[in-house]
Figure 1 (cartoon, rainbow, N blue to C red):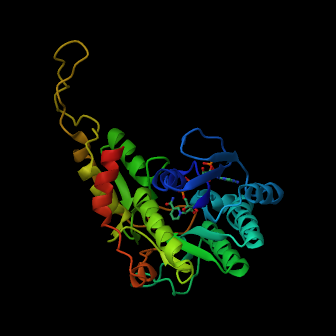
Figure 2: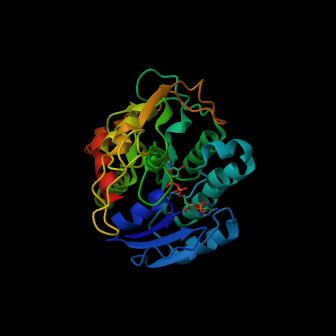
Length: 322
Ligand SMILES: NC(=O)c1ccc[n+]([C@@H]2O[C@H](COP(=O)([O-])OP(=O)(O)OC[C@H]3O[C@@H](n4cnc5c(N)ncnc54)[C@H](OP(=O)(O)O)[C@@H]3O)[C@@H](O)[C@H]2O)c1
């Protein structure tokens, strides 16, 4: 199948390019990237430019577009509202209009932040949306535009992404654990950390089913790794599972040198990095985040697909990968 991936140099885009390599893949991104030799074409494109977006999609003429490009700086969106809406809403409209013109199917990647987080149980695809941040609102506008313009669409809401090719919470915690003896992490926001490699694999499964069934499958899907935790519990698990070394605790002996340049194995000092639970109130951020953003993968399950593995198992594989 001929597939166009927007944001192909981003975190999810990167894993999609690796995972879907049996297809004819075309990538677009705002920045040039020579990450992939497997791509049939790579174009530098700003999707907020409607004319160029239309021309690029016309030229490639894909069977399906997987739209991952987005403004993803959640706090930054609060002070850059125009930019966030331009990319997440108008950019998405540009892609959807081109898909409409050529009757191309579209997969739009959306977010748990379309919900307000007040529900006590996990959110299902049919729950009422009520985004609280500019990022959440701009992504929700993207969803609405896709639904208004297209019949042949998939909206995939996912959460708390981490992957090899991008800044994410896991990398931040690993870096901080190297420098600090304690980390204060929010313990009253809950979600499902999701490995981009697992999400890309799920999209591959969906595409395979789509190829054989063609219709029937369109709609909104929640796709995340299974299980849930707070950011605090996630951070504790990262520190526990990682082999990264933290600062040498007071009184601990300096690492011994054996021969020149060679060092004796050191203890895992990161394991001593203390993770301290704090409340959202104590850790103020510019953007309001949902307290509960756990997504039940209901449509995925009732469509007969296997739920993704538990988040802590996926984390172990990710730490191995990086
Ligand atoms: N990250 C999360 O935790 C999370 C959670 C839920 C849902 N999502 C959604 O999942 C999708 C993928 O997220 P991600 O974390 O993989 O995003 P990402 O790493 O930020 O990747 C997005 C890519 O799009 C590029 N881009 C930015 N502006 C563009 C433009 N005007 N035209 C074309 N390309 C542009 C970015 O380039 P630059 O790097 O140069 O900006 C980047 O390469 C997004 O739609 C996001 O909203 C993410």
